[in-house]
Length: 497
Image 1 (cartoon, one colour):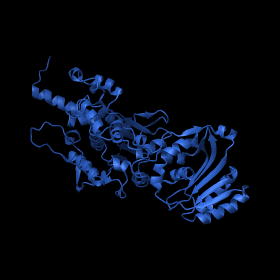
Image 2 (cartoon, one colour):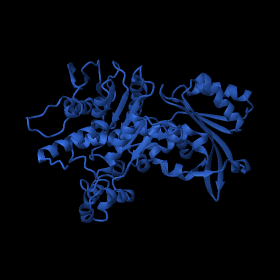
Image 3 (tube, rainbow, N blue to C red):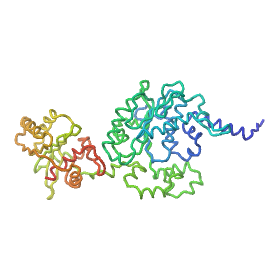
Image 4 (cartoon, rainbow, N blue to C red):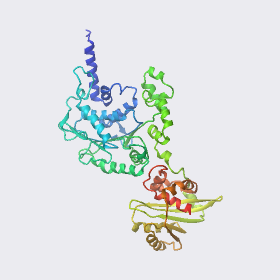
């Protein structure tokens, strides 16, 4: 027997089928609510949704640890829907588990509150009229409702819960609650913040010292999601990846224009749309909403560093570094060299947050050009009681002939202490120079940068041998505010004498 159904019955069955899928999967939840925006051809948004789904379900396994991924990093161009996808994921998570506690942060309170309001209002939404056929949160999760007594924009809860969602700007207060899911969305506001090392340091300290301390006591392994443009190797993503020895972060990174997009677009776009695109459009991440012509115009209008950060996830450091690639030597070569002189320069910590930096150079004239081979670097924020002895040991070990100590801040007292100790360690004939440095340090560092690159020769393994020094020097920015300039200042001293 064949059962005939009218259009109304067919529509109802399709609707119920969408609701059933939406209850089970984040991607179908987003599609059910906004079918036009979350179209099938937006494969990159589906990738984000499915990855968050995998973190929630424990189905995406880290091959290095054999444990499910719980940390997700999303680095994709602006204005393609990544944050909107995450907000839909949050709604879905709360619909399935009203006991989850989410802390959501962005670069300021206003932006964080906007997303909080969007999620809160979506959960609280009602149909506008009786024949409204749009699918909303309440259709999919009818038993999950917003608390009427706890529903402020910054902090709200579902019925029967103490708290479910807290919104805060970077640096804001998150001290009253613990979260099972922590989200950082666009922590860097713009390029000026990306060029400011002090600002990057502030955000990192807040992230590690404040936000991560707010993990719920009942949650030993929270889900963490970071959504941001990659601005700098010292941004939150850069620092996390630098120390991610166990590949704990599942990284979704895509470029606005790239050959890899071509294959995906061909797979997901309908033939009519595909045939209407130019070859360059086919390589765009979202060719229906962000075509190559617009991409090309932005490339011509925006400074290259900002454009590459926004649309290719290339950090500004790569184009804004003060120094180019340094000359290097194999450490075994130095053992066979007879240096014309061995110098040391010690720059004392000017302020409490600065570093003491000591660099020992072997100076050699090669084909009429004088080169400074870096033999040793000592960079520390330890006090003088520790550093006097350590500097003296190194001056003795490398048989330094002349040592210059900057005396702006207690240099004379430091020099006397080192003189006394260096004789004990076996270098009584060293000549000491105490000199006050004047003038604008930053201007001097930038002025002599090309000479530093031409005359200073680093050990080939200096990244591993002197990691903190390496990171600082290779990350020093031409434009913007650098947090410290102690190592760079020491690199200049002997060159300008």
